[in-house]
Length: 425
Image (tube, rainbow, N blue to C red; front, side, top):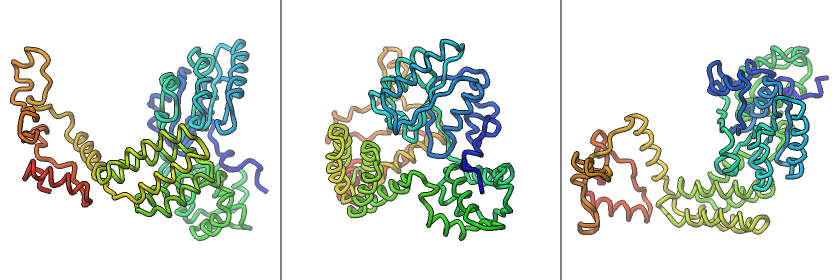
């Protein structure tokens, strides 16, 4: 019989040397490691996908700097709980030279009032806040609190990291050592866990527990057990990222029936309405763009309406927006254009701005040619004058290519009429 503590908990590292991945943060010469080793811990937000070590890192920090450690989950904590923990931390701090660490898991689920209740304690140094979030903190953490925190982005674990974790568990876990286990294949373990180390270890343990005698881990064995017991190792049971992926792909694929079904799945699973609305805002530009510019307007209005209406009424507004976006013409031309332009900037570096395009607020700047030969478009027929707006080194480069839909066909014809060969496509 295996220990009552799950394998993921038994394998949780106690120090930075045993911590998996995140070399850019806690590697030998990384900035966060340096702060931890010096005991100079700022309030911070740890941002990254589930199961990549946010909670573990917070615990290691507290252990390394030897400070009291308080933890709250934003899912089931209110303003009262926050204030109680802060009061407790203040009382304890009276007898300690170091202020306590307050860890808040899923801080993006805190309301504005809950986040406001943290401000004074963080600002006064009564606690050092470590918040963990799977969502972009720029959207989910109030600006006053965000300005008092460093944001550290945790990167997804790669295949080598995860396979190394499995081998480490086999080598070091005392419970697994009691069994004869051969790790023959890992593809299905990695596939079902989706890069989440906690899910990976829980699934691995589940497979082992359901076998008698010698265990040979194969893809087929893992698939058969995972499909029957998915809720046992995915305790959320909501398949959060898989469902949002299906939702986005259904809208992109112009299938409103499927899109509204996945919307219903998210609603019934308790998904945050703002999370859904924000994804629709992104999709309106990334997948529809100039094929139907009204899509962005509707998505933005939906985002605003969701915040005003709340549940359950906003489900109707979301449904209206989802079915509209799914039924709309699609284009990713704007998305491709900015990707290609950014790639060009990274490749070419900071190219000089052509002299005619430079700002010339002083007499000296004008004398040395800033703004000279620039043609003011509104002084010419059709408010247009052909001239070069790109740096000389990339003159003639095309980033935006209108796609085959009625709106962008109009844009394409206009650009061709104005620029002729330059925008001949």
